[in-house]
Amino acid sequence: MSAQRGQIEVIIDELILDGFGPRYRDEVAAAVQKELADRLDGWRPVTGSAADHIDGGAFVVAPTATPDEIGREVAGHVARALGGNRREGAH
Image 1 (cartoon, helix red, strand yellow):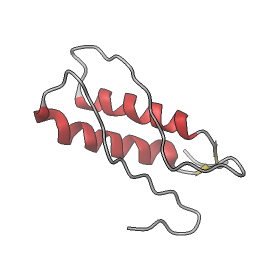
Image 2 (tube, one colour):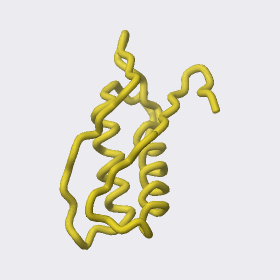
Image 3 (cartoon, helix red, strand yellow):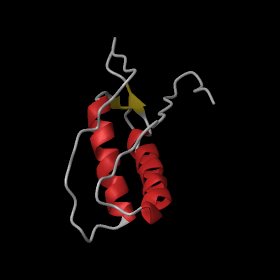
């Protein structure tokens, strides 16, 4: 799938979640996808920026965190790592 002009395409090749059982994998992935779509709606890169690889960093979540909470945390780290600006009027 290729991004259309004016759109960003994010491909996550690997997501490492130490300490979480594999049964949550699909739920966390879906939460990351939804949250990134929401956070990047209207996103525009800083002029001249490019990224082939982004490290979202490491973080700690509560042992009782839900897949949605984990997904929001991952998406937040990726969005911050991307930098850039949101278009005016974007939610």
